[in-house]
Image 1 (tube, helix red, strand yellow):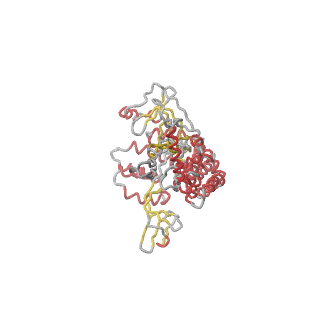
Image 2 (cartoon, rainbow, N blue to C red):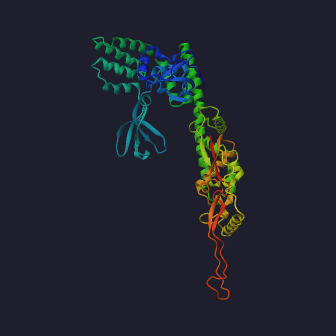
Image 3 (spheres, one colour):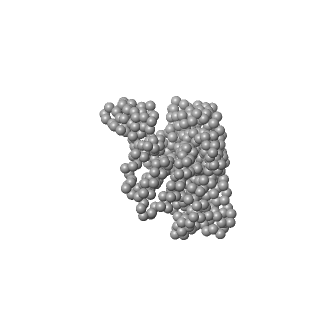
Length: 534
């Protein structure tokens, strides 16, 4: 969602910390400061960022800097509190400043993988008793998977307001006005406005010097107004809480219920709820698209890895699997894995969200890389170099012009290597078989097979956004496509004719020298083809 804000050129790109401190003390900082058609945004650390707000989401803002045009992504918590609250309200990301109070509780895991949270009241070798919000249950040790763990959850998920109040009483000095004020603030944070008002009255009795009169008067008026709207505020808070937990459908349903449940609510509040509903619906789409994108990448890797590990599947069958089965199997698997999160994740929706992932900056996946690796030679030189975004020397691999003698010696050596089964002198021999796709695939390491299949699927399936096609010079020949090797020649035995001197009349060995042969790793292709994709 875009919200362009033009910045006045008269506003400096940065303000020092002391000056920011003075400005923040002003009531004018309840909203972003504006120049001629512009504004600048103070941060929590005291600095001021000047730029154009180009995006805002559930998580924060994206700002284009005025001074250098760079993009800065800010979480809401990085903004100075008054500005954070103002912008959240302006963009419809908050009705009230709801900070969900969390508490430390015990978490147990049952044999079926489900979890229970609460407070362990008792525990022995036979089992334990767990106090949950609505009940207290005993679990036998045989029902548990592992030992209980400590975790933090929203307080009202586990305890009632009565229980939280009873537990909090011992933590405050109720013999002093300040203790009652601090407890009042805690009670306000869990929306227990009735008890909070009572502690304001207790604080007034103890504040004999009148030190807290102003604070107590303003807090009392605020809490009285909130108490009169208790149900409405609880409903708005629940929308915010479900949004924070990414329970999108619950949050949307609560938004839709609001106007009917609270017909006398202010028109501004009703309008805010509608704006909130639109933002939550948009956030749900963004979240679901991100989930699908991550799942597709993850399961694409897994399914291809499974195929690459299968040594019984030859090259031809593995490649056929990419074009005939993998796409359908991939989307079906992702839908099945995501359905426990929401029944909405059907195959058609998964395919739709996947196709839309690059249309929105918020859902655009980070670029990933994959290479055909040493299997690049299977593509052939033309295909391996086709459409490369990095410029390669077109003469690479040609080397210096050879003399007639060098060319003949190289041809003889190449024929000798082929007769020996070397096809270029790779370790272990058998290179002649490796020079075919089937031979290479049979002998290649699982990782090489996997990356080759992944690269082929990414480039040919039409399901991925190719960001760049790169050629990485062969590590063996440096991108020349050929290597130089030393020939020592094969000396023939001497033949003594007429009992002459030692070696007289014998055949001479071919002279030794350096010859150039095709690289046994890239087979003259010169590069490993690499893809950057989303």
